[in-house]
Length: 68
Image (cartoon, rainbow, N blue to C red; front, side, top):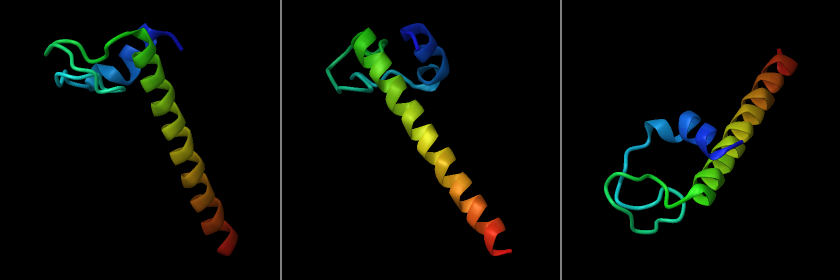
């Protein structure tokens, strides 16, 4: 996924906080990431977390139906 896709999907709702959301490097009050690498790494981490949550939900659903 590209930097711009990452910005649109995950970071669009992030507010600038004075530091990079990925590496915590000090930034101005406008930017959310210090560069493309951090934005893409943040995107990858967020996507991995989504996949883990979906897998957990599926496991719980499967276990619920298996015991019924």
